[in-house]
Image (tube, rainbow, N blue to C red; front, side, top):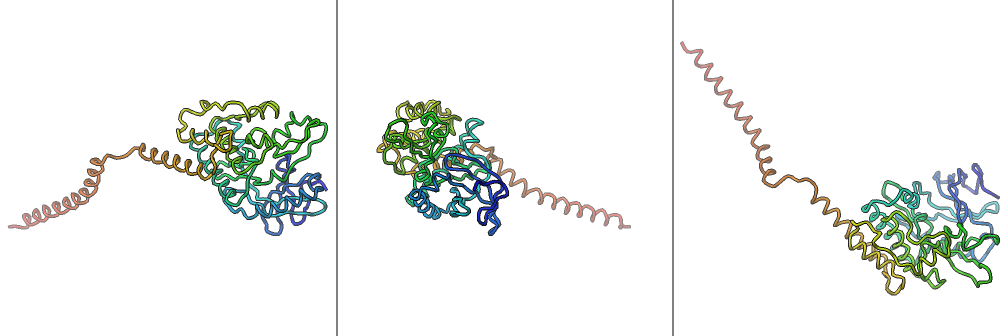
Amino acid sequence: MPLAAGARLGSYEILDRLGEGGMGEVWRATDTRLDRDVAIKVLPAAFVNDKERLARLEREARLLAQLHHSNIAAIFGLEDADGVRALVMELVDGPTLAERLTAGAIPLDQSLSIGRQIAVALEQAHDKGIIHRDLKPQNVKAPLDGTIKVLDFGLAKVMAPVLPPEIDALRSPILMNSPTISVMPGTQAGIILGTAAYMSPEQARGGVVDKRTDIWAFGVVLFEMLIGRQLFAAETVTDTLVNVLKTDIDFSLLPVETPSAIRQLLRRCLERNPRNRLHDIADARIVLDDVLERRAEDEREQAPAVSPGRSRRARVAWIAAPMALAAAFMLGGLVGSRRGTAVDEP
């Protein structure tokens, strides 16, 4: 049953469509039982009919339901009604990071703040053994109030959209922007791809990935916030993969005001050999904490301040003013009294 505005899916009233991608359609809906708006992600029919993948998704959803953090969009459950299988997720309003980046680079302090929040979200998930595998600006909600939400944790490894046979897989815009996909171009045995421009080199080669693949993607996202454009993306998936695997990263593209600690962090995150890459996202979060705190201290020190001598004089003046006023009243009263006595004398 295709969804449409006004339709019902179990206890959910469908309101309007929010978007469509390789992982299915996303709709805004109202939970009529709890009176709250949610996001409904309708799974592709090919996915629903694959019992093995559906079972994996259910296991993953149960695991993801344990993630409770302000920087992670929550999964509320799975819904199965009228032949439609859907994920029920927290609705997060506001632009994605990808949408904000269409206007160009994000100011340094904002980039560092967003990067820190992404690192915190990854740290929370990694501590529970959950790897995102598809971190990219499209999967980060970045409203202007400053609180970001990372979307679709852990779903990429189980949600593999099926491409129509007539699509040239290595040139497909669907593939360029889709999560981890298994495709079989020509007679090749099969290639495991993530969203091409944000894949780690080991992921691009179809190798085993661990949390360090998220650290690579984190580095790419932070780099792109600072320069205002994509780091590896090219016209085709093949060209993008070549960039990911071989093209030298030009760190001179970073703004001149980028702190040296952030430049070093990006170098560590973007090591192509995972053995040499930053091993734990918590270390990135610590670096960002330190840099943000140092910048805040510098800003406080540079704020206009009253000199100590002037401050003391000001305090003395505030104290002396009431005393002088009181003395004036007393003196005026004394003079008036004397004048009154003189007038009364014979």
